Length: 198
Ligand SMILES: Cc1cc2nc3c(=O)[nH]c(=O)nc-3n(C[C@H](O)[C@H](O)[C@H](O)COP(=O)(O)O)c2cc1C
Picture 1 (cartoon, rainbow, N blue to C red):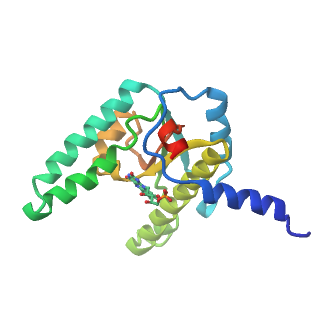
Picture 2 (picture 1 turned 60 degrees about the vertical axis):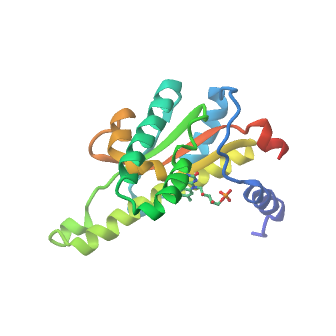
Picture 3 (picture 1 turned 90 degrees about the vertical axis):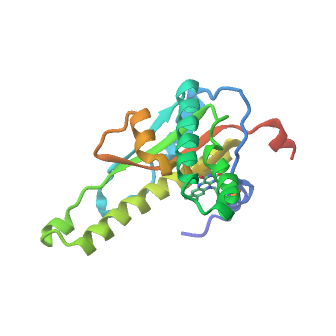
């Protein structure tokens, strides 16, 4: 079959236009638009033939603000242990960990580590690490598809792992089962006017 250059150009222009969005319009995201993003995410490939991941949708504004407060509080605790001459840089950097706070929706990619080969090999730590990394790589593919789907709809999105410094608190807030881990938090919404005009 011949190459489809029109599809390639369309994909390339979406990939080129995509930039992390950290300021969102207050306009809520309609469910049908959100579903379009999720429909693409669900097509993601996965390692070892095991689709052990899902995407949790957080739309409640109070939960999103609570998540930002939780991350901020955790970073404050961490900051106390940062070398004094580096503390200001750490705190400036950590501001990016709550860049999701104006987003109307958070897509929380979550996965479960399911050991198989490592068990067959008598609990091999090395193979266990490899398996875990495979699950993390799989969930990263999901994030990438979400970002591209968002951009194709002219939505703003930002894939974030900074907030996961407060992983356990966030997992409790988002009611994620103990056996599961968060891969990333993807802030999603309409881009703010500022960015659109920028
Ligand atoms: C795995 C991963 C984690 C990231 N975590 C954060 C984050 O915590 N906060 C943030 O503001 N941006 C985060 N980003 C976005 C990057 O900062 C951004 O992709 C990078 O600076 C390139 O800019 P661009 O996305 O606009 O092309 C993350 C990106 C990736 C891929």
